[in-house]
Amino acid sequence: MDTGVVMDIASNAMITAIMVASPILLISIIVGLAVSIFQATTHIQEQTLTFVPKVLAIVGVMILFGPWMITVLTTFITELYSGMNTLFL
Image: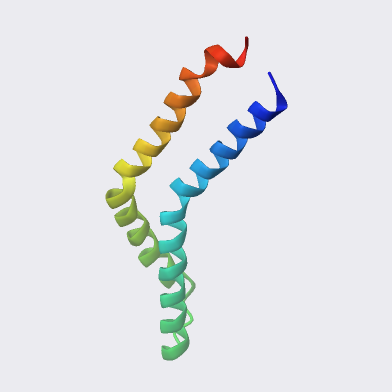
């Protein structure tokens, strides 16, 4: 197996991981920032206040983007397995 092929597989894997993780990370950052602004304006410094909105937002994102995430992952795995015959020859 050539190093160029390995690098291509690794870069595709990293791009797929970023694509799948980005909706969850972005919503988590946005909700965390909104809760932090709310805490700063109301002087409520409860540590557990950020937990519930983030969990609810992440569950909502998983419901909305879950099918797309599964499609992206299965496409990557299918392409990886279909090209396996040519990788080891």
